Length: 296
Image 1 (spheres, rainbow, N blue to C red):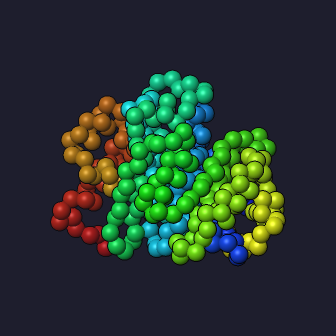
Image 2 (cartoon, rainbow, N blue to C red; image 1 turned 30 degrees about the horizontal axis):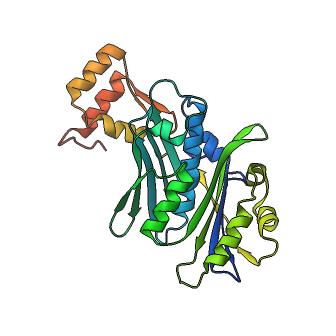
Image 3 (cartoon, rainbow, N blue to C red; image 1 turned 90 degrees about the vertical axis):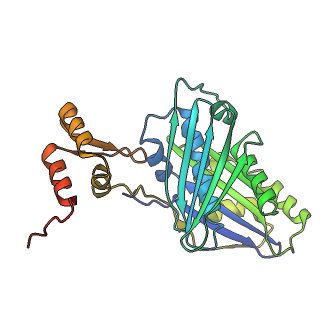
């Protein structure tokens, strides 16, 4: 299941030709809106999902291989889980779980409590990597800047914004990172950092990439690459739900049927519910039975 692609659901990569610094810009609307409308999320959790979505897109763009990144916030606060999964093709999905009332002005630490960020990188070929990051910083961008400095020893800055633009929720962000070849200078990076600090939410949400980068860096030579489309892709299906049902003991499934009249599986990522009545369930178990003859 995918959203209709619009021009704003794009990830842009760029380089400064005379400075050893790389950059990324991601601007999201439909993808972000698709995630936050799957449940009745309180506004602070919508913002947290948007921030994690932007961060995952920016980090996924740093992958040099086919694979995926899962970023998961966990803690003992009212928000027990926020997770975004994305791959090198910029296919994203996400969900959050919470309990109780959420204050309208709740901060990251008030939402998550004593928690941490788990970053899982899964290449299609090669070993899976998992890093656990403490929530050191006032916001997610600062947490991730510390992660890059410790894990990759690369100076990195992130700007992550969520909010409304033209009456609709938007999420966007930028990343600057010193090139890993060791030729970048701290002065060059700080210069670009100061320029990027001037970016306004309305510019991040509303300006085309070429206009935004010119507004920020018109004194520099910027090479902007072909953008990559960001999509919401859940991956759930009726077939997968059916496969999940037959992993449960048939007696337990029959008990649910007797009580509810049907067996329903709900996807937290997209909000879709798949329901099966008694005849459909019987057929599923009959098809999965060993030595089930194939009818020609």
